[in-house]
Length: 321
Image 1 (tube, rainbow, N blue to C red):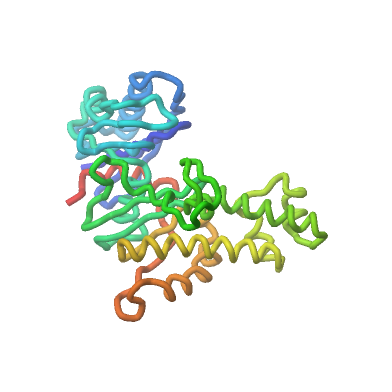
Image 2: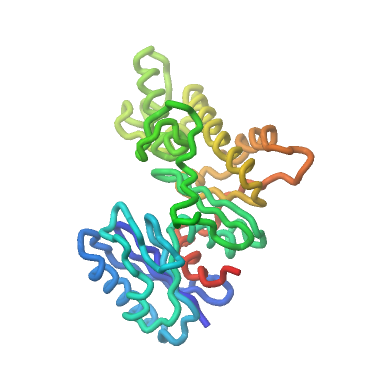
């Protein structure tokens, strides 16, 4: 038997076939064209799934379970996407609609960050654990929580918005409307903002920094700018990276002290820094974890499934115990 995972994004819909070893054996995508009605988007999703199966000599009868990873508030209990800020969905019964279009008997649903966390728990960095958390460091800070081999999403399917815990009261404005959210400091956006501010400071004071040239005077700052300049020995860049690590550690320690998971896996673009991220991060975790030295310590790891985490996690949503 096989599993089918669908990652529904604002730009593309991606589908993948996952085998019994939790390996993705095929993938295909189509544009979402998110301005259209939900029925049109879901029709394309269904056709994508059927085309992918046909290309690999499979039928809906070969699929044990299909799963959808959706942005926004996705209620797996009702099979409805309640709200998605970049898609025209409102209480949309996406599971029943996809099942009807494809003939796949069982279709599951969860939020895309939750699905990615489940993928890492079953087939990735947290494989073999029963309690884990995944943090995605991208444009924002996404989160997914696994407790006793089940995705935790709160009573209303809107839980695990870990990027919106406040780490600095009345701090930087966040896109959610609050101030001082972890996302405002530890996302790629937050890192870019801190890097740009340091570049502006260096230019204003005449302090030399490789970041100025790398970013064309602050015009092309990315999440890699400060790390690249730090590796070149730039002191100002090292200050940016050090501050970023401290903010990241602050939020991670909060997560550890609340959930005490066996593993926290870090995904998203910034996680590509790997040991440049983990090595300076771990001393903060070790020093500040509640019960450090008396209880086993949470292991911080780099996520393994990359951009496929959502598809694989969605495909395996039906496996929750």
